[in-house]
Length: 173
Image (cartoon, rainbow, N blue to C red; front, side, top):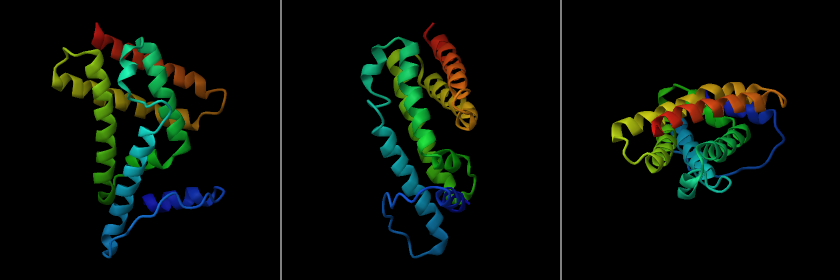
C-alpha cells in the first residue's frame, strides 16, 4: 500500500531522478518492509539536516514561543516536501509498522531531549509522555496544515503553535 501510494504520488510529479538506491532482499515478502526501513532511515537523515538542526541544544536557551517556531516551521516544511512521511506513519500494514514505529520513536526521542533540557526535574515517565503528547498534537493538525491553501495554512500553523506553547509551558510551570 505504501509503495502504491508513493508511486501514485510520483506519477503526478516531474521526474526528479532517484534519490537513493536500496538493496532489496531476495524474499518478495520482505521487500515492502525493506523499502519502509530505507524510507524511515532517509527521513531521519533529512530531518537531521533540516535548517539549523531541529533539535540543537542551543534551542534550549530560547523563549518557548521562539523554540516552537524554530522546530515547528521546518517540520512543516519537511512534511510538505516529503508527503510520504505522513503516509508511512499512517499506514498500518505489518510490513510498515516496524519502520513507522522506529521513525515515530526517533522523533519522540528528540522531542524528549528538548523537554529534558527545559525541564530537568521532570520525571522520566512524565517526560516520555509529554514528548508523545507533543508529537501527537503536531501530528493531529498536520493533515489540516498540509491540505490548507496558502492563505489558510499560516492560520492553522499559528493555532498549532499556540496549543504547543500552552501545553509545553504548563510543564515548565
